[in-house]
Amino acid sequence: GDVPFQTFDPPTSTQPTGSGFYAQKSMHRALGIAARSFSTTVSRCAKPTPSKAHLAVTPLQENLPKGFVVTGVAAGVKKKEGVLDLALILSKQPNTSAAACFTRNAFQAAPVIVCQDVLQQTSGRANALIVNSGCANAVTGKQGLKDAWEMVSSTDSLLSKVMSNDSTPKGSHSSLVMSTGVIGQNLPIAKIISTVKDLAPDSLDSTPEKWESAAQAFMTTDTFPKLRARTFELSGKEVRIAGIDKGAGMIHPDMGPASPAPGLHATLLGVIATDAAISPPVLQEALTYAVNRSFNSISIDGDMSTNDTVVVFANGASGMPEIDDIHSPEFHKFQQELTAFAADLAQLVVRDGEGATKFVTVNVRGALTYEDAHQVASKISTSALVKTALYGEDANWGRVLAATGSTHLSAPITPNTVSVSFIPTDGSEILPLLKNGEPEKVDEDRAKVILQKEDLEIRVDLGMGNEQASYWTCDFSHEYVTINGDYRS
Image (cartoon, rainbow, N blue to C red; front, side):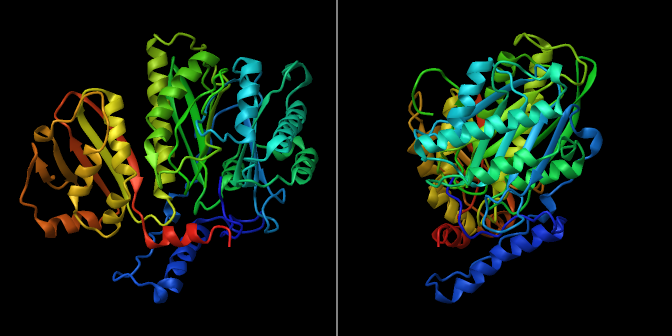
C-alpha cells in the first residue's frame, strides 16, 4: 500500500525491458536527489543510489515450473497509458495446492480478506492468482470487497477457458487476488474486468518473457522486476520453482497463515509456483516456516503494510508422489529449499529499498531462543539511528548496542557477555567493536573501508545460549525522505 501517484513507471508493453531501462530508473532516483541538494541544510552531500539493473534476471526456460501459464498486461489501473499493471498466474493442473501468509495489520485490505475466505472454503486448493498494481484496494469498505470478489470471479472464468472443462474446479472459487498501490482509493474495476474478459487463453504462456511481463506488472516504486527460478531434486524427480515479489517501501512484514478467528492480521507481495506435489496442510506448514525466516526477516522502514501477502502454489506436474507427512525426510528437504528460495526473493526487496545504498545482514547469535535472536535483529534493523549511521558510513556501534539493550527478551540480557563485530563481505578479517561487554580499540580507518562497501554484516553475540537469527535491512538516505515526502504530490 501507499504508493505514489507520480512514480517512474515500469515499462509499457511497447517499451524495451532490458537492463538499460532499469539502470535509467535507478538514475532517475539519483537525479531526484541532486535536484534537491541545493536546498538542503545538511553538511554531507547526498550519495547516488547504486544501480540495481544487474538484479533484473531472465530465468531459464528449463527452470520454470511445469503446468503454469502466466502473463502481464496493461489494464489501465495506473495513470500512464500502456504500463503493465495486471498479472495473472494460472495452474493448468487439477487439485493444485495453495497456501498463503497474510499481513497481521489490523486494517487488512480487501484482497487479503478475500484470499483468506477462498482458502478456507477450498481447504487449501486454488489454481490461479490475479494481481494488480497502482491501487491497493485497502480501507475501501464494502465496495472494496465487492471489487476483490469480482476480480476472483473473472479469473475463475478465464481459468475455465484455459483448463479443459472436465478438469475445472467445481463448486467454489479457484482464484486468489492481490493488490498494491495507494491506500483508500477504489479500483477502476470495470477496466480490470474488461481486460481479463478480453484475454484469449493462448495469450498466457510459460515462456521466460511471459514470466517477466508478470513480474513487471507487480511493480510500483520498484526499480527492477523481482523474478527468480531454479530446480532441485525431490523424491527422485527434478522439481522446478519460480517466484515473483515486489516491494521497495512500507516494508516490515509480519505475516502468518489465515485464521478463522477474528484478530490482527510500497507493500510486499510475493507468489511462488512449484511443480512439486505437496498436500495443502503440509504446504502451509512449509510456507509458514519459510516466511518467518525470509519475508518476516526483512525491513526497509519498519512500516507494516495493509496488503502484505505471500502465496505458494504446488501443482504436482513434476510427477513426484505427493508429500503429506511433515515428519518425512522429503518434507524437510522441501521446507529447506522453499526457505532458501524465499530468502533470496526477500533479499531482492531489501536491495531495492527506496533510496537504499547499503544491504546489511544483521546476525544475532548466542540467544536462548530463536525468537529472542529474531527480536533483537529486528530491533537493530529498524533503528533509525543505526540506519542513518550506516548511510553516513559511521562506525557508531553504540547505536547497535542501545537497540540490543532496549529489546525485551525471555530472560534479561547480561551486558558483560555481549559482543559486537563488523563482518566484511570480502572475506577479510572480522573487525571486533565490543567483546564481552568491553569496548575494543577500533581501527576507524578500517571500519570506514568496511562501511563503504555496499554489502556488510553486523554480528551481535549475546553470549547467553546457542540460538541465532538473521535480519536483512538497508540504510536510511536523503533519497528515502525525498521519495516518501513526495508520494502523493
